[in-house]
Image 1 (tube, protein in one colour):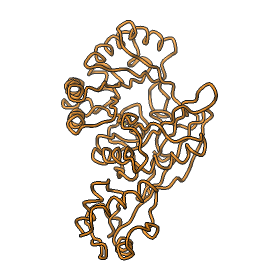
Image 2: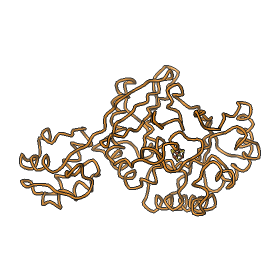
Image 3: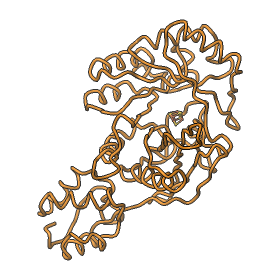
Image 4: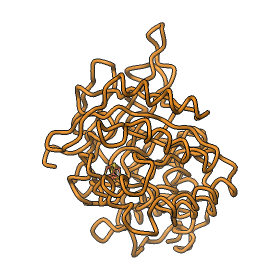
Length: 367
Ligand code: SF4
């Protein structure tokens, strides 16, 4: 593509047209350069798409007319659209998005409300895939199986739209992003890292990388890749069991040696050596499965693998799955053991349970 000629490209196409929302800043610059236009035209495209939310080339007024014509013919900017939005009693908002493929993904906006009733933090929980291949026994999304990887643009769009919802409902923008919606982010590795680059670009939403958290079941090889690729965001590991046997029972991914707890231990230690950043463990308590005092002792050992903190979650039962919520008394005993062992622990109360927006509850109705 020159400023005056046509555009063609073979990846990320919508029909015959390339979807520019599959590209981050560098890829857009490469794309225009490959077609003979100066690289700064890529920056201009980036600004329109990710800074202004514009998807119609006609409105990209600083691009030459002939370039816009070429783009219209040969490229597209695929948006996702909100098809349904619900607000829970605690003001958590869940949105259902339709992707260009027609499939649907869910996103949740979680406000942390202060004593004056104002949102001091607004966190978007994004999906990185439709469905999930990991098959964790306690998870509604796992029941769907894997259906689709989201593009960097589709991940960005979830935050962009929720940012508008945040401004409308809470009078301030989104402050945090967590990859804890549908899917295993590290199985859509490139798109997730590209979406973080976009979200933290000062020409886009300009979020702080330290306010973004990638949450994984613990794919050891990919955890090492994150360290090598210089992830600037936080890493959370969905642990949910402190020993190999229990973990394999509830999280099939743990059965393979290369993704078992010993492999994860090695990867997390490597990650800490390379990045110097502490690890967050997510640990959901299931009655009679992983909530004993002995489990807490074992969890404390895991927490010492590298500097870390533990987030304890209370389970939100999912219809058709055989897991129960632990009692408050058992939670207290569990926390007591961890504190005695010197573990930094926070109990996270799930939000949005009345609209199935809490952790592990995200799944389309046909799941
Ligand atoms: S808990 Fe996360 S990794 Fe496991 S099945 Fe659900 S979405 Fe996938």
